[in-house]
Length: 112
Length: 111
Image (cartoon, rainbow over all chains, first blue to last red; front, side, top):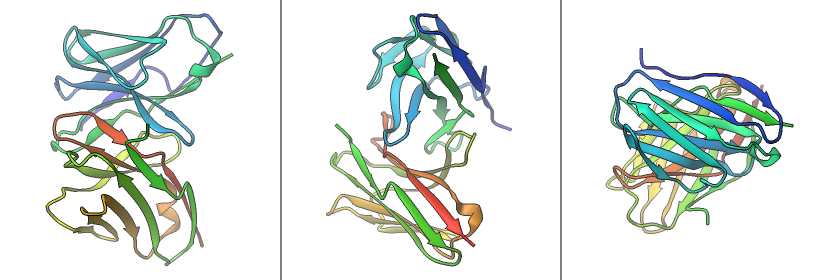
């Protein structure tokens, strides 16, 4: 069974903390994506990676960075968390069927 | 700017009724239009998708209608059931490139 797992379902952090969100996929795919989901705004692409150590900015990269040291793992980093980064974060890879994207369960991050 | 515009933001339908969600896009280079279904606490899951070479695709109670000239596509859920209550997202992409998502529609089907 195909899996995209995210390290935490819920996370509460303080303003200014460094936050790591991890995503692991077992599909051996080159491409991985990080989105944030906010009510009324839908899903917005933060960063994506098309190979190990390769990364590309999405539509809203400000305040975020990423790391891809191994093919199966893609990390999203909030260098100094702020309250406006409170959101649902979703990791995705291309679907095994070749159509669409396959999403992880999401991490709901609250920054106080 | 929003590449894909989705409406309505929320929808309430009686059990057995038809739910209709609409999306519009601007980029004529898009060639893949999926719909995703998301239940609370879960990530979005691919529901049904269409390419612009056909005007309609049906899978069970779910149908996508596609109007290439108007740059619009819609999801129809026939015989809506309470179990269909979820958030629905449309999306668009050019093959091999970034996906752009609509803002989502919260569907509630009341018994």
